[in-house]
Figure (cartoon, rainbow, N blue to C red):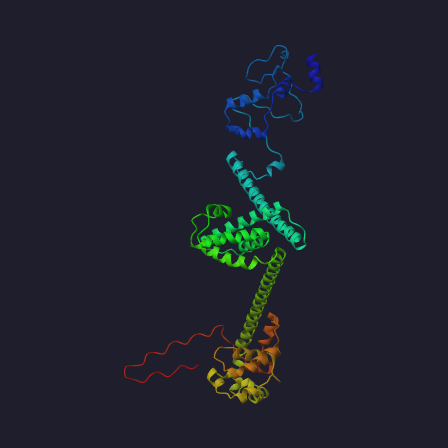
Length: 449
């Protein structure tokens, strides 16, 4: 009957025994070292997976129980291809090879080494550090917000005429004493923190009138070196103050003498107005610096464009000044004194009279000619009389930086002068130095500019 039942389901007794053996997962075999695991490790793992009391015993670990032992059967005929069954663990030695991973698993990066417990713990530690830093930053932001809200609440109460409770006055005093110790530490270290000093002054004006008078007397006693240990303990200052602390006590005595006659409401209002003025001045300064940076960047871009145009058309001015080129262009160049500045050196420009500079104008000048003139007159060593003409040219050209396409168009000479165009080298080679004069002979002639 058992044989007929087995033939009916199409499963051999060998497959029944193999199906009853626990199979290790791929991850667990990798933890045990894959095919390099020892037989004892695999045996222990299989025993751990086998449920107790079930009577199942893995192959190679002992005979099965009589109740669960199948009856001996003749060898079955060669079975037909059966559905794939889970790969059993081969009896040691050697251990069963790991089954081939599916295509999705095969696509995973096999070259990366598995994460060890040490590296995993290190990653967790780094993540905890990042979380702690984020929590610390959030806590500091909350503390600053809480302090700002407390100060705002105190200011609203005082300026609105609401009576401040005694415990709130004591909290304000303790807050001021904390800022006082921070300022004294800052001064003893020889540094200055504007934010801390502003917080100190803000806490000072929030003190009650009685606390301000007590503070005035305490700093006066420290300054004249008659303070008792109770005064030092109250302020949180060492009973052996250094020169920096004595100097600070002198400054605070003068400052408190000016504040002691003002009501707390007026002190807070004056401090808030001062902070608003400082904030406005800082914003104006930053805005002015940004405007200056933009103006400098635009001036640099304009100067670069003018230099490119002057370098590309330098041959044109020399050709026209020498009387070569198209007749109308040569006549126009000689008729306009402004164009003669393009081929004049600094010494010749300084020899021009103020009357000649006043008679110069932009009428009839082309854009590339005006840009070349701005480049020439913007060099150092130019006469002061040329400033008005230079400003006139700059106003005529405007402050718009030309694009690369516009600069290339400005670098082109008139069409009538193209036959006389000369190729300009990218960088003119420097002339070699003249040879030294022979002993007793005349000096060499000066180099041409």
